[in-house]
Image (cartoon, rainbow over all chains, first blue to last red; front, side):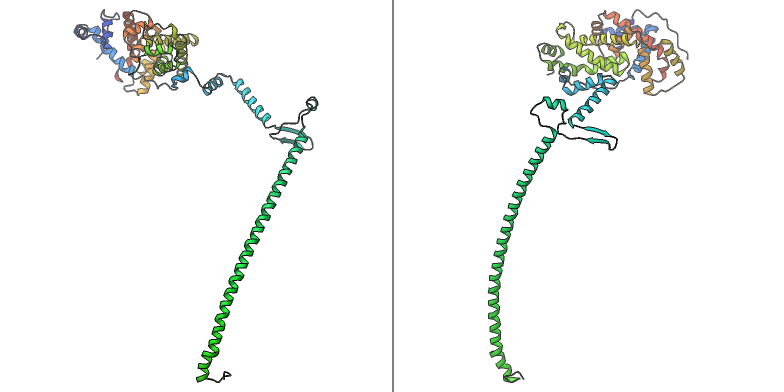
Length: 231
Length: 181
């Protein structure tokens, strides 16, 4: 069924209609408007259409705020946030320059040296020791040690430390050996004493057995089976 | 008991910067929603949120308390939105395009909610600015006509008239949705 075409001029109650639509009328005003709608096709039509439009509007939902800011952070942003904001604000070339600066800083910190010679090709060296200063700088800085001297000093100290360690180790080994010797001696002495005591006991038992055989058993066997020479 | 906005503003004005943080937490989502619906771009909306609270913090001493803090804040947010619209000229989708879509879509009897939402978004963005802002403040921010009038510095009757006109525009543009909603 085709809907009746409504005039484009709104009813004089259009503001009231809007108030009614959004529940901002008093109950008396609302009742009065409901009576009006029964009589006014324009308002009835508008009301029905606008309610439908509102239902459609309700379909447009948005995602919650994706980056909720903590209150304190807004007033006093922390270092990390400031750094992140600065980083975001940088153009691409600025980021590239920062990256390059960071790489150079790291190379400088680790004293990376890249040398090239035709016969040896590229040589890559890195250490935490300071690089050898250029000749001019070294001559101007009077008491500074050069790289070779520092290395010699370190080697010497390492040698000293190694010698000290070796001496200490030798002393410990000597002490340990002495202790082992003592323990071994004590063990051997104990063993000898034990052995001697055991032997004495064994001898005593053996002698007793021999005595028993010679006089007890021999006498008894010889008496019944053989002569005194065993035959 | 939860402190009202005006009491928190008073504390912030007395030097408690943390108090302002409470206001941000309380209102950032609402400001974002308003900005997103006004501008249509999440990135712009996020920037408007930041600009709004920055401006509010800087002008806190100007807040006299005659209006509600929320009205004052919404006004700042809307001004930020206007600035951005002027800068980027992200003006509404032309009416012809919206109507063309409407005709094309009329044949569909049932439409997915997401598609409905997208069409609604486009229809709202196609509204003239003065209608769009009243509609968004009323429909999505749930403000009273008194509050809207206060924010936009217009009479209440004007706010209602603009909303009527806005709904009338939308009725025509969303006519094809009548079977879908």
